[in-house]
Image (cartoon, rainbow, N blue to C red; front, top):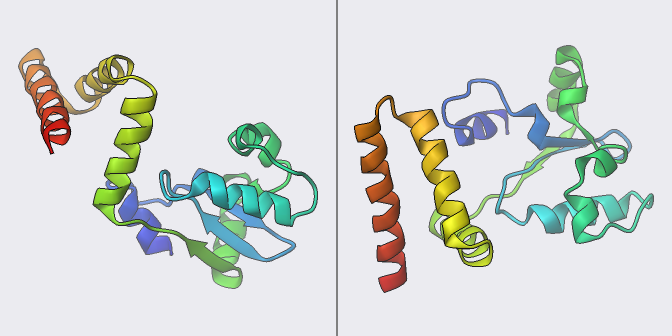
Amino acid sequence: MKNTCMRLQLQNTEPQWVSMFVSDKRRYVYCAVPKVAYTSWMHTLLTLTGKMSPTRETVHKLKISDKIIKRAHYYTLVQRRQLLQKYYKFMFVREPMERLVSAYTDKVLHLGWDRLKSNLEDRIKRRRHTHAQRGKIAKKCITSFVTIKIKY
């Protein structure tokens, strides 16, 4: 699981401990992946504790869910290593194109393209491009992707 989590984080060599949920009582580590039934699985795992009947909103409020299922980043490095050695580890994956379409539907169609587009353009410019010309290229790429997606 460690290798898969690291690979999914692209350039990070350290697992994303904040995305791993731990149950000491049931002795498992769940590595959450966005757009791969995260809400459904967290709802199920929180319900199984018997401590709450979560709603869609409370599943995403980490201040609430962290009190019931701790995230691995709260453990020390030594404790994390022990968790990965001794606990049952699991994660769910999804076919990449299906995941992309789901994200597009959720974020673009439901949130609104204008809001998402401006956020994406800003993030791309900040993270990937060093000068304005590259930012213009990224803007064209985003627009092209959406145009292609709508046509097909």
